[in-house]
Amino acid sequence: MKKSTFEKNGGYFVNGVAYMDCKVTGEPVANVSTDIVSVIGSKAVQGRVGIPKEKSARVKSGRPAGWHWMSEFVDKDGSVFHKGVEQHDLKGTLPPTKITPKKKTKTKRRSQEEILLAREAEKKAVLKKAVKKQKDFINHKFGD
Image 1 (cartoon, rainbow, N blue to C red):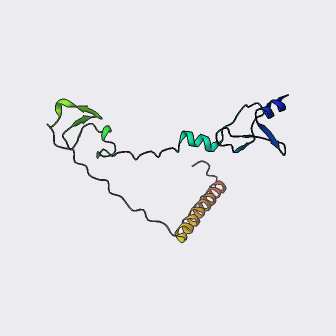
Image 2: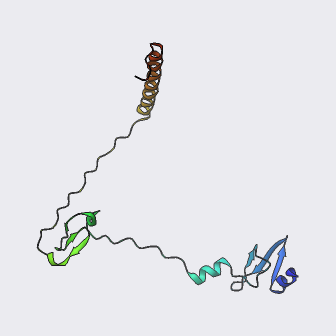
């Protein structure tokens, strides 16, 4: 009974897979349920919805990172902020906060040889510790 209702609505089977033609474009849509009446293909849906727009980049305020956490921050235009809350009555009474950029330290990359030497030194330290533990055990020094 389901099969005949599906076929009445325009559905058909190819090699045991249920197909139905898109009601907008007429293109075949595969793997549809036999309970449906009509189907809209992915291209038709995208045509109706449209291509998603890219998010625009965030507009920078010109203030330093973390300015709203500062106990007091004075903007270039004279606006005064206490913990990110603007104080309208203090506008223009204080000099702008001087921002000193953080110095970037360049990290030195280790060569392959240095990495291997460090790894060997770690293994050697572990072995020394194990040997010392055994010597202490032999000399009856427990937990010292």
